[in-house]
Structure formats: C-alpha cells, structure tokens
Length: 383
Image (cartoon, rainbow, N blue to C red; front, top):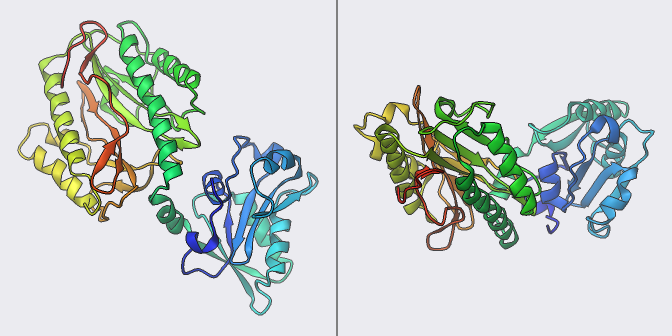
C-alpha cells in the first residue's frame, strides 16, 4: 500500500491528524500488525501534517516496522518500553511543529470511534503540562470519503478475497448434510479458507439453520441441521488486508413451497437491484427498486430494509444502502447488494453479492458456478 499524503486524505484541513485505528494506519502508511494487546505491547499511532508523517510505535517493533514502512517517506519514532505509551512522543512532535505556540489550545484531528481512551487521556495530560488544551476535530468522515473509491491495487485485493470466499461457498454446498451442527460448518469453512490463503475472517461467520436464520443478529451454535432446513451462510475471507462478504441461503435436501417462494423473491430482488448498478445511480434508486418489487406482496412485512454497504479494509464500510441514503455510485466503488426476508418460525433467506462499479456498469465479484436453492441431498438447479 502506497503512503497517502495529508492533502489527499484531509482536504481543507490545516491541523495535524492523529491516526490510531489499525485499518487507517495501514491505509495511510502501509503498516499492519495483528498484535493488538496494548497492555502487553503498547499502542501505536501515526501523526500526519502538511509537513510530513510520523509513526510512533513501541521500540520492540522496530524490525517489523522497518520491513513495512519506508523511513524516508515516514519518520519513525520508536518509544521505549519504560514509557507508558506514545502520548509523550506525540506531544513532543506537536510541540516541534509549533502547534499551540501562540494559542491556548492545540488543534488535532482524530478518529472519534477509534481513539483509545488511554491515549486520549494521556495526550491531554502531556499537553496540559505544557499549558495547552486540545481542540479535537473528528476526521472520520474524511477517512470514509477517502476510502470510498478504490485504487487498482485495492480492487485486485478485493477480487482475491472474493475468490477465496467463492471457493469456500462452493465447498459449503458439498458439506451441507443433516446432522451437522452450525458450528461444524463454521469450523470446516474457516479452515478451508485458511488453507486457501485467507489471512483470517473479517467478522463472525454466520451459519444459521432453520428458525435460527430468522434473525440477522443470531450466531451459530450447536443446533443440528435437519433435512428441509434453510441454512443461511454469511461469511468472507481476507486477502491483501481486504475483506470479502457474501451470503447464500440453501435448503438442505429439499425445499418446502413456502421456502421456495421466499428464495425466489429474494433472488429476483437481488438480481434486479444489481442490474441497475452503474456510475451515477443513486443509492435511493436501489432502495426504491427493492421496494417496488415488494409492493403488495404478502412477504413485504418481513423484508429487512437494509440492502447493502461499501466494502474494503473492513467488511462493512460507509455508506450503507438503507432508507434515506442519498449518494450516487462512483466508478471503482465496491458494494454489496444483500436483500433479505426473515420469517419467524420459518427461517430467513438472504442473498448477497459483492459488486464492483465499473466505468460503464458493474462486475459481480462473487457468485456460484451453478446457482440453486437446494444443496446437499437432492441438489436442484436454478433459482
């Protein structure tokens, strides 16, 4: 990942910015580590300004950092184990930049939802000792905007991540059998993706059977799959730091008429919405497309009005395709389209694909070689 410059990330800003979430540190300077145990290894953060970028990290990380970050592009600032954290080093950097020399407060950008409380308090204390307060400015919307449109490198990583998850879903069709538990499926599929090169899973995998599939917040458990159950599989892989996220719902062995009707409706909504994806289309148009297809349908009350989201370093990023969303699709955005209908006592069906917005239309990054609702015993073809 190439280092980003201050102006491209924070247009219109003049204050330095403190970056502390691992995804945005990677996005800004290309450094990544899964070692996230601050009490044992310490915190790390990036300070960016118009004058340059500084990476503050525990000195024990030096070999790891040197292998990932160009010291000529980013100034490396290791701090010793004896220090309680990076706050003092960051305060010194801000002081050297001249922040607050002629004012009572230091203006500093930060990620409102990601700054560690300990770093926040320590930094306020360090600057307070110098007689300066901190005027915090949330830069989260600017990061969301910057990460929205993907580079060629990012699109390639997303395609690789989707490819691993596609293989796993093809494999899932072969192991959906009565008697297997939801957690059995999770274990087998996560292991399969690791063997195929996944760096991990971007979120807790969903393998929900029967009535457990009727609520989107449910988690897999020890429920055993029965013949005729609907099984909702929602998962992703990680490749080159980028996530995938897609869903298929299968009936095991056989499908009742009610489940078949449910599946066909969701399939039709998803396909019609995807067909409309291209630059210039507004997210509200996609929501209206789904709504139009549900008008007068008895299953409409069970439709979850959440149609998708952007995807990138995280499996779910801004924006979400929900009622009230009002933004036009742009070339090289990557989004999901994921209509779902969830009927208490019966189960839920969600069908989700990742869609790359191309110059003149779209490309679906996920999908099965042979789509169908019934899996396991007695596989049937077609939606």
